Length: 101
Image (tube, rainbow, N blue to C red; front, side, top):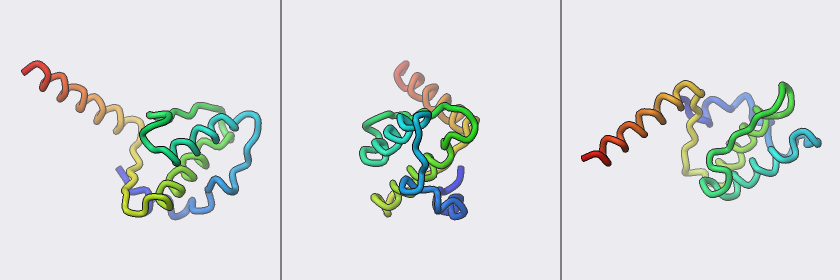
């Protein structure tokens, strides 16, 4: 896991303001903006799937920057898919164990 602010310094130009929206990514842009405005409420989890070069990384960086602007005291952690799957599986196992008691 990495802290967003430390990892993303090189991507500070990847914001919503300079994202090039098109027909192929307009739904992803709308969903990402809504997540930034109402984190944990809409599109939880947010899942973006599209081809190479259509803006996935840009949108996720923009989401991070916008969230930090709105919530400067909150932390953002970047987790790769393998780490997320492992930690999520462990959390589910712990909850199932607790419910069996």
